[in-house]
Image (cartoon, rainbow, N blue to C red; front, side, top):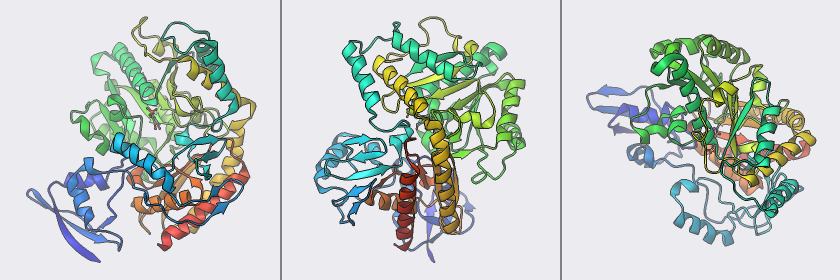
Length: 525
Ligand SMILES: Cc1ncc(COP(=O)(O)O)c(C=O)c1O
């Protein structure tokens, strides 16, 4: 159905919405009829629309990227069927009417950007369960945001934090402490021999910023001021601070920077879906196409799997990249902020699936299953480039955070959670492939390994992300007691699955049943 002809001022505005990926943002539900007509200062866009499209998309297009928001969940309490199973309990309207004042208060006092997640007011969380104050219980397939690898609210972690607090050291800046020494040693011992040092920080963005600085510093020392370029990948995400955001691969998220660093460039991520070309020659071709030569590059950074779709690069590609970096004295950085601590199953670190050793890795999220802590681990010569006092951070290795991290790592090891993620993950991945097979029209791709996966929801029969349908699926699951964070990835179309690594096969199968029901209901709307 042709519903209208819209005028837009700049064709590249549209490509920001449609042609390029952005993280956790929604796309107008449009199918482009073909091409854009190029007239001086005026471009005509023909829209074919699905029945649910409102003319509101006009405003979305005209409003500019700052108007774009994460998907909005239903905020009006709705009667939903009661659920009472081993892993889920829903006995109220959703959202819970009594929770609305809290949601309103958050909306009043916090920035709008904090409103993107399902309106469930978390009260406590334990193992694979999240509870509110009104008797509801969700089976958690989010791990917060891939944080609680050893499970939510582990008693051992709570005790370690309390013991450290009771002991009487809450903060020590960069002054030496025994507990920081223990964690740095532990991170190095978990790593291959090439990785001899660990620098402990607080957030993931801080770790990726640090990796950028280390690579750039190394580049200058081996190649002079010219060798400062960083290559990263389309649709990548490395954090929201200035350097981290520029290494990300979503143009819309970088608009606020305006004068982006021209030496930070992106090439396609070879996920086999958004980029069908997965050979390393494509990487070389794109470098050449952008006029980039190895003598101007200090580093390459990639998420071990791209968070947006849980997509891995081919093994041969990563091995070729490793060799190319070796040949050109370029630092290879794997951002393991989502991938480490057993998430991908079989291996403790995600990069081990590629049979390579990066020069630096960044860690965060699952490191402590709880407290804010991150790290950069890697080659001694890279981490030792700065003299005393010039590479520090106020909360580096906070003792409570170190206690949590050490205990979480212990739990991952003693409870064999890496192999559990491999074994139970195989069931999860198989079931998701079956879902993809049964719904091939609207699931464009389903990538993942171990206990992380991304169901890429698309407009029926196309490869265009369907953010509304993805949101409807998540909304339906929330109402049935299965918890996800809001859809992420290219066009906001990916339903991301990342339960705590303590999950059982039984709980995975229960969740799969709920997901299936929710997809069927969302499609029937
Ligand atoms: C791969 C990756 N790198 C970096 C970051 C940034 O971490 P943080 O939000 O802790 O700054 C994230 C967070 O989502 C991430 O997924």
